[in-house]
Length: 349
Image (cartoon, rainbow, N blue to C red):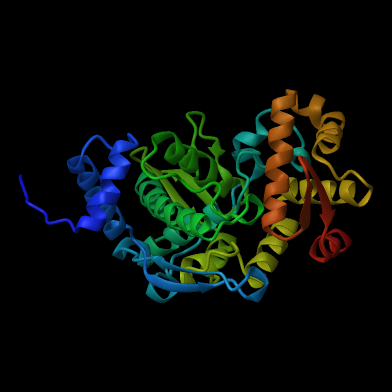
């Protein structure tokens, strides 16, 4: 389709300069690019929101156009009418993590699951679609949760880019990236849940005992919320409920999560206490931590150096998100220190 556009001389001169520099082949190519960019901006699903980072950040503010679709809005607490029946927690023997015959206390959550926010989003999606039922079709849940998580990933990364967030301040890690198949598959399998052919459960949600899975009489795999999973899903969240992207969780959520881990997830509780103890004892850099992991778990896990680094990195990422440790970077060196919250957890668990 052909259109004729009047371009003011000043703008035309600027475009011609760009063409002469070789950035565009013609005026037509520039206009087509501008049209595509504007369509992208118009379709970017965000609600208008003023984000003020405060005086300590030079009064930086960003207007983010956030317009959530009906599917995304449906997981906000004030939109949910569900009262699902809960299911029992999976036993450690139900998990694929039990197969190497390692003690439960020595089984850490897989290190590529380095954030908890993606899990929280999945739990909220499951809660929102359960109604009064006890079980939901696993694949239907995973598809919806992945699409919503990808939306949050896109919006949060846009905010983080616009506000020049450094890596340590970014909360978007772990959320799927747009329509990338591998990114969505990673989210479904690592942060959500699936059942292996041997009927063992995998993924962070069953490992953390927030959900359980079962097969019905037709062989369809179903997922249900445990009491802990439902209660965690019901807690208000700054990201999901207020589009506040400065932090993943509020204090109440962190308190609930830590109490749950302490009482019901032996491997994660043991891992957190182990690493906090190492930091208190002066093991504060990545290589030194890796060496300690290798000494104490390398043979038990039959793990390569790459796996050891992944496990350490994932654990420290989750602990940083929960406010249990701090990071201090000097050049390429990163040192970790324990926070008051970390000290409290170590003392009381």
